[in-house]
Amino acid sequence: MMQARMRQASLVAVGLVIALAGTAFAQNDPSLGKWKLNLAKSKYDPGPAPKSETRVYEAWENDGVKVTLNRVEADGKSVTFGYSAHYDGKDYEYTGSPAYDTIALKRVDATTTESTLKKGGKVVLTQKGVASADGKTRTVTTVTGANHNVAVFDKQ
Image 1 (cartoon, rainbow, N blue to C red):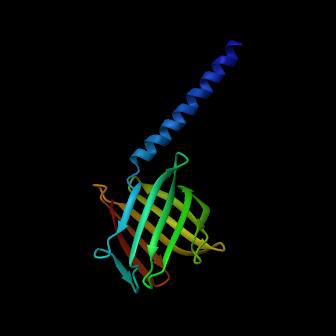
Image 2 (image 1 turned 45 degrees about the horizontal axis):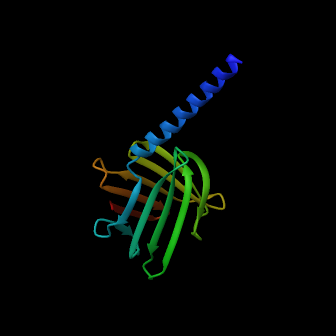
């Protein structure tokens, strides 16, 4: 009876450590929050650039991220994309885009992430996101074929 209680107490303690580690991760992730595209600081080669974009990054399942992107394309069409993924390099569903259907995330360091977006299992584009040391800007570099875009976002 005593061993069962000790085992149960140990399991509860392990669960609390995991939950607290996830909370600490979320609090230390500089990417979390609402971000607005700063077109003046961004570069789209060859373009065209979107008219606007807002991204919301939220903590998801202790060690992942849920992202919602609202964009007004250059032609004025409004689109919403999104995903929920862990930073484990595995493919997760990406919704709202005809160009890709999965995303895989990797955390390089505390301020840098890498993303691989695929359509039907084939890599369509790669991205590198870097949060500034002061946490006020986030730069996302996208490479797809000959296109090389650098989008700068300001924290809201």
